[in-house]
Image (cartoon, rainbow, N blue to C red; front, side, top):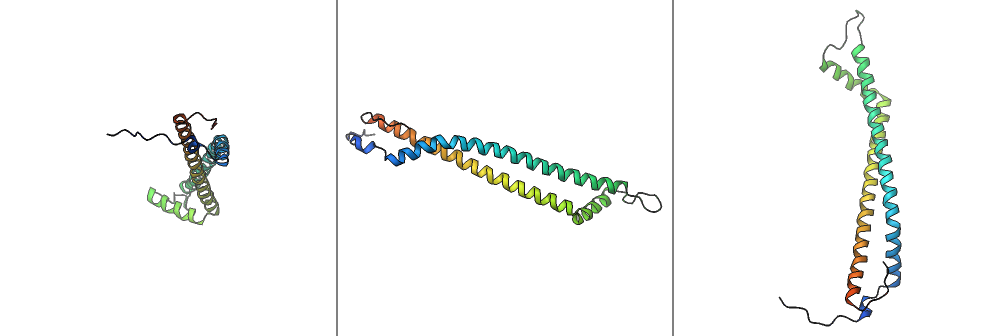
Length: 151
């Protein structure tokens, strides 16, 4: 393994473009707040999704309760076994406007949560990348004569 014996580049090679430096500093200050806001949004949307799932379960249980209690004209139970009750549940759910509304809400909340998680992941990755760039310039400037670079 050979050592690199070439002289270091002149210190001008390590100067950051002022706009790049300002943008980097701005992003490093802005992104943590954005990440925290997105985390709060994920939490809120997770709660909304759970509420929609509870509504779904409750609606299903309400209909199943009606099915279980259903009696014929002779006073006998109409749906005597699990297969008949499940079939009747499917029929009633397919006709229920409330069920359709709940399913739409579930799908919407699930999509919003997924979208916000993607945004959060992007913001975290973006912040990590910018931190790496800032560290890289700090390390590289230590090789050259010291410059006043604040990142």
